[in-house]
Image (cartoon, rainbow, N blue to C red; front, side, top):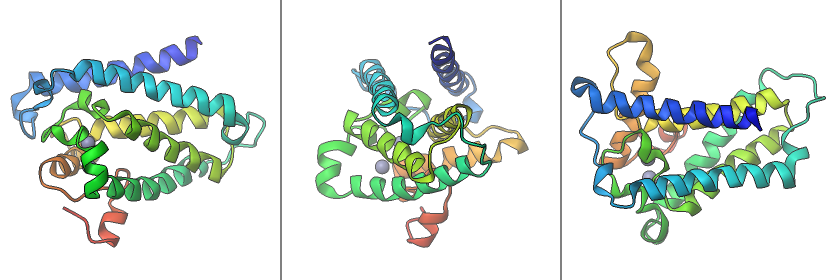
Length: 211
Ligand SMILES: [Zn+2]
Ligand SMILES: [Zn+2]
């Protein structure tokens, strides 16, 4: 329980740090964030955070043996395989959410913000939270159950990448090229379209949706 609480606190602290950097350093912003316009912003974010924890809990309780196996010998490549598989699945889920019918019913909530910030990564219709995590957990199950450490690493990486996509920051450090790339591409997705993938640009390149 302490382990889970520490992971949640670390994620919340990272989200807070990104949000603080966006508010504090004008020169680092891609554009002024517009999430504050949503009167239900914090309620929605809190609800989706709770839903995400619920999906993890149900996933572990019901499908735990397909996700985690502490006795399995370590496979260093497994987390990478999961994230690549997830990237492919999420690309198509995201494109599906942009079909007019699903956009009108579900994805419009997330797209109310043209220039989201870290907090707005969780400003979603709850269906989208569930669907995204189902794709992630299904990717883990397909690659095969992994050690607890690897499972937590995959979950954390997925969360961190999602936060970086919405960070609305261009950090003036050479080493920050990847976070900067994520944030720039996803800001373009919200304001102009294209760029449906999250981990790699591979599927957007391949299917001609690079924005
Ligand atoms: Zn979208
Ligand atoms: Zn987004």
